[in-house]
Image (cartoon, rainbow, N blue to C red; front, side):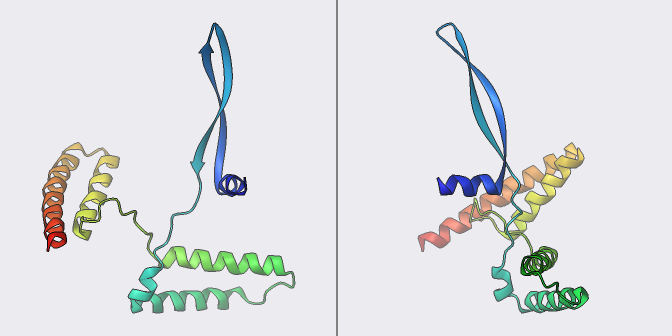
Length: 152
């Protein structure tokens, strides 16, 4: 039960009514649809790997806290200000972690996926079709290289 409460806290739940026809009767059953409002996960491992990014993030956090001035006496309000400052600074400086569905894809191929998505959203069908072919060719090469590395 606590996991369900945590899930309900993290997500916005919509209650829908679905009708089922059973033995000559309509039965309304509630169906829960989750529309996740969780923020995207930041790739904090890059802070340890990239010293330039870590330096920029340190400077941004220092500047954000120096701009705040004095904290209020209420600990809850002080904590919310601190949390919001750190989260907004992190969101502005640390890239979002990408879901790894296909570990064999290189960063160049992932960039082609992003370009393909942009072309689709803009309605540029010819560019999308061209990038689809490029993606298929690159992903095939990436998969072959990945399988060779594993087989060694």
